[in-house]
Length: 139
Image 1 (tube, rainbow, N blue to C red):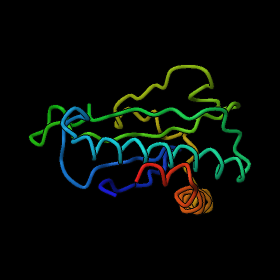
Image 2: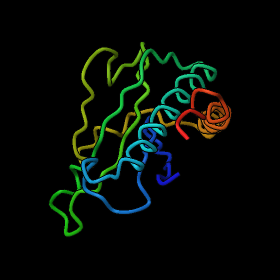
Image 3: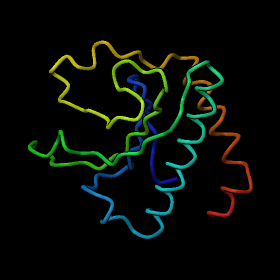
């Protein structure tokens, strides 16, 4: 797979290409297909794995990102955040748009982070899901 998955500890998973690219319009068709496949697998695994951990995931949100680096010398670097939206969430309430202020605002300090056990469950699901016929069709 061309992307690598980086696990963020803010109740989101982050998918980043191994190379610098500013947005998805610059991906080749093969890379775009792999990027979509990985997002589908990660979203499905997150939903199943976190539910198994007792988190009441109602929906998964997917968002291409890169805004925080737009004014840096490197410029924007495309990556996707995969958010599990819990139906009983207190901060990012279920059904409302995701709010993503800059890191230095302190907004994220009250977030519950994904535990090592949560991540282990998600990784187990990724392996299982990748072996299903649904995702073999991508090859």
